[in-house]
Length: 389
Ligand SMILES: [Zn+2]
Picture 1 (tube, helix red, strand yellow):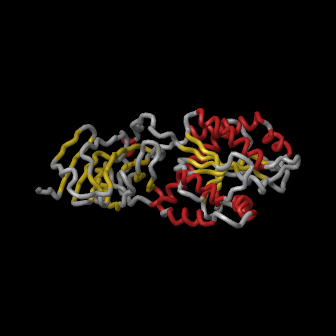
Picture 2 (cartoon, protein in one colour):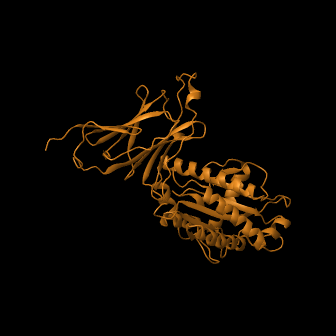
Picture 3 (cartoon, helix red, strand yellow):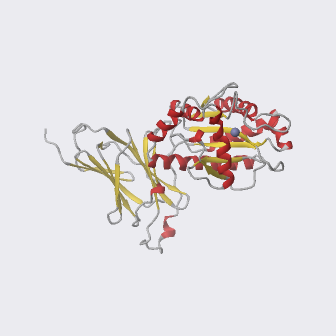
């Protein structure tokens, strides 16, 4: 069979001009292009999402007024009709199949600079989505500014129908068993409060259509990496670790929210991570291996995507708590520290629900009504989280 070396599919808005079509299985591609979509992100960023059947191996190049994404060992999608939002820098998208390489060429209204690492995400499948390469960019420094106001139209992102798979949330009640966590002056134990909140949260999220799992449903001790590995095994889309805080200053109160980073955002966050990570020192036998495996499995790009999604969730969670008028610990909305329980490929956050060291808050944390209020805020934050990109 004669095989065309070059196969071009030109797609621009509603027009799709097929110049030449490569026979469908001309080579045994490991990967296949599923969809391409565009959108506008805050800060007038253009977002290009390329969805593929397996994890893509890609490179980027920037010929004049174009962005070219080259996917190795990938088959074109002859049926592709890209979802093109208005107001982006992208005017047309073309697929060029060259041997086993697929180039996706985005024609741009204005030139762009090289896309910084921070604006590239590689996401694992979730819901109805397969692997996604997500690129965010703005007009480059060379762009003319006189015409920038012409491109501020808001995007109408293509709304997807309800996913066939429920989003999976793993809820981790901190501590347990021989590890009580912190203990209030009135004798309230962190492990008891967070288990109660975790169970309530599971009920509410299940009722709201999520698939949830608890890392522990009774008073048992689990290593931190084991908790993280439950998120992996359940293919969770979100991992929430629930805790309550203690502070030597008894007047200190309020919730605080943390995401994983190897460097702590401040000294207090570092101390807190040390305290929470110390749960592992209670029992030194067991699951150290999980931690190591997960760390090896994470590429730096994936780590970046997980961190970005975690921060996005955590910011939404802080807003939901504030809207519910739950007292916030003074300081930034979201802080970062090396929490062992968050080390995985699953985006997530560690939520300190309040201070057991504060007498008033200890009372609140024990009360069923306040626990319900906390749960309602967390449910809102999960519902508000953008599981799809
Ligand atoms: Zn804790």
